[in-house]
Length: 345
Image 1 (cartoon, rainbow, N blue to C red):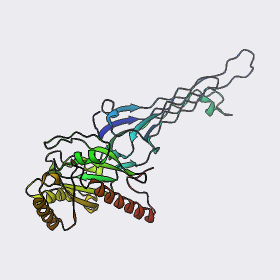
Image 2: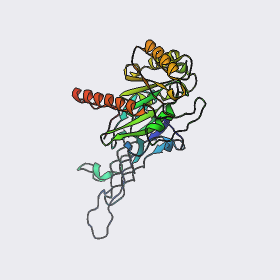
Image 3: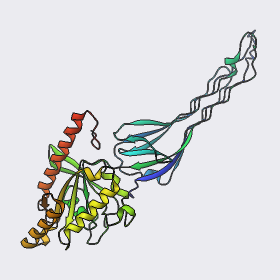
Image 4: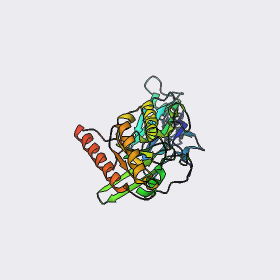
């Protein structure tokens, strides 16, 4: 299934049905009079966040959605039926933006339902206009037009921890070693072309979602490589795990490159808790391993963890540390009395 995280759609609510102009003409009824019914209300357009979806692929081949028109009123005071509603179902974490990219709503929890376009009201039939002066009105109201708008749907995956690093830093291998996810793994850069999610299950009480983001390169914030298109998927995370390939010569430069791109992107990514890890240590001898760890610690000014996704070395310890930070962040958000970003039941 193709991963699609941004799409433009056009929505229109239904027009209201017209009111009817009608008069009673029955053989054994002495007095007739107007009996035109009202038109039905036009259908609404709703958007709903549902579980079980992780891409916007449903909107790749259909971008136009129109709710039903209300049925016109009829004689004998028969009112028209309301038009059928349209419900756009999207993954949890989808942002709905106006055509000018102004945020309308963030669909951040399952079951959330928001009205995008309200259907037009049905018109009054001629029954509404009868009175002592005008006992036989020969006019009725037309239904009101529905609303129309173009919107952008932008998906930001719900994950607790995000994996970042240069291409070929071993992120997909680390994800495969950490969870049941099976991302594509190969020995060339840009193996991952779309974000991958995996559920990390350390124990009954230690479970969280880990997101693997396609690699960043120098100049990504200016559009180089895949650019920073997918960084939105780690905006909601509590912790970033920054993997640096230990087999490259200049590990400090690799760390600086990714940090620069995170800071250039903004949106709070540069301030998130970060765990820095030197990956692929199984391919290094003890002396080289310690030298590159010291070089990376000197550049970053933080403790560096030693891991290997391929050999499953240090992976569990790193994941437990990440989970502790996730739990700490949840507690901080709960203490502030706000809903935590990215964590939904």
